Image 1 (cartoon, one colour):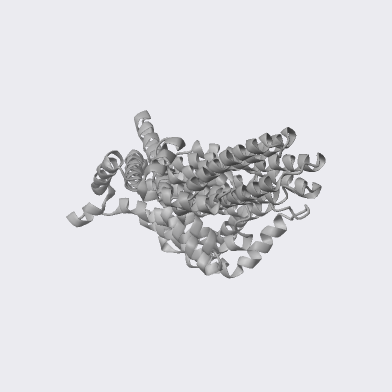
Image 2 (cartoon, rainbow, N blue to C red):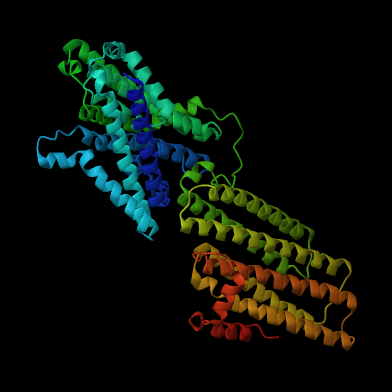
Length: 584
């Protein structure tokens, strides 16, 4: 084997691994996190879980990605350990689809029709079509489909290149002697395990074995134990993923290992026992891309059929391996912001939105409490509002850090706009809770200094307070539903609150002139209505963010000007309704 042959082999391997990774990443982008969401919601029983694991893995072409996602689900409290066992088994079968796709390289080109099925015939067309779709199409979905086609074409081209580079190995005595060594089942399994653990993909390592089989130099006696080892080696990815996780996530990872190890011991042990009695003739034959795909599939199907009735026992074994020595953990609201989900931006965004909804509810609770007790200060209520503000600060910190990490990944244009929108929303939500605390300070000052407002001032504050409560409630609903129907109602009410502030300040000056109010009382009054207005302003920002989240750039004031002057938004009608509702 010359240096040029080795370079060709390395180049083919690089293209193969790149194509597989690129195709898988594009498939994940195309799914937009939907497959993961389905996996999360529908894994209610073992048979449904198996089917879901199979379908998701067949689509994203990676059992490792599926199991890592399961580790993240359990680590974040979204799923329970028992729900993941059958899904893992389904993923093991689903990953064999890749081997069957790669087996098309072994199609004999004896007729024109069969020749068309060979990758060297159709991959150039797929590559050209994919490149055109990625360069010309304006649709994000079509560009992702184009990327999938390009990735598949590169993968198949890399496979062909590896096969051509290794074609001379058939008559190489040194290579033949190495292969004979791996006919020993233990050494063969060890070889397959190490190879797969290094590249962290059973699909890729099986593909490399299939490419090697095209030389005609790989006997089945060598290929079979290597395939068994490849199935064990693929568990390294979830194991590495779970190292930094909690006890439950480690149990998911060890479940993956147990399923593969037990499967290899039972299926491999029974097969070699039978082979010792019956001396299967096909073990002396040459392995082909088809036979490798078949063995890989049969092993995973048979081991799943054997083990799926014992999901509960596997769960108990995993729990016995990693005993929970700690006291029960307090529920952590932020566990769903798992870094593992960053590899699937669409799903990570959905998890972030759920946490933001919780953040808005906490913010709304702090505003309501501060308004309801504005003239009845209570230390316990003040402590609760302060605790809520601290929690909202934590939400902002955790979400902000997570979204910044997410922004560093490859996002679609829509996903990038979503991240920007969410960052703006959490900033405004945090500021609203700050103003709720400011109102508590005003409430305490009223009590300590025994300040008494006039009946007119109290009435004005009550009206404005009700308007602020409503605008916060609308903002919460707008964030919860991402609905334009709710978001469009915020700006008219914000304008009414601005008008209320102006009227209240004017009335206050009149009362000062008539000696119906004091300067000291006026400072507190001014603080209250200023915080009212600021809360409404931040709600307005949230509404603008939701209304324009799919627009390029961020110019809320310009956009709100458009909202006010566009008759289709019914701004004038809604403004008139709110003005009538909150008159002073």
